[in-house]
Image (tube, helix red, strand yellow):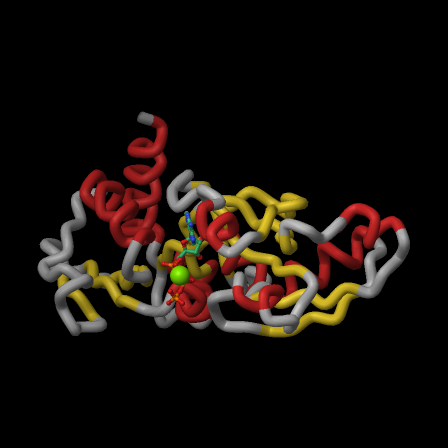
Length: 214
Ligand code: ATP
Ligand code: MG
């Protein structure tokens, strides 16, 4: 019997994915939020889940350590998508990739004047591409979290980060000044696995596809 492995991250991705998995007849036997297990069995003997860091999901699927995965477009854009088939926008974990600056900073005139900007972000590739397309010169500073802090302590002029309500920006006296791209989570499939295990993967893909149409 062919087995498949699905890579997921804890938190919002898992919460939003559980109903889609259920629609495909897949239910985890443990709750990843309370279990320390990194490999979760499901009600189906030939389907298992692995729990990895959100930004690691494309890597596990690219190398075939997982056949399927669910990853945010933010993460996929940084990864580059090599070896991945991305058939479905699941429309979950929606937010926006934005440029944000301190409330008092005149971003538009800084850009107009051709100023060189220091940008702190976890999304270095995405930021590099965005500012290159605009013809804005930037120095990129890689951070791993709490980007909002960087402009407050003089580490950067601006940040590139995900924004949903905008409350975190507001609480730190920052404002969003530019949208880079809308973000949502995608189903990703290892290209080789899709060919070799189509019999088992296709029904999962179809069930997800039907579930998001409702
Ligand atoms: P970690 O918390 O382990 O550092 P992470 O911050 O990437 O990793 P999450 O915060 O769970 O993990 O984010 C997972 C995915 O959810 C992101 O890649 C993004 O696609 C999406 N996401 C992140 N923040 C939001 C948000 N505020 N609203 C909606 N979706 C979001
Ligand atoms: Mg997070």
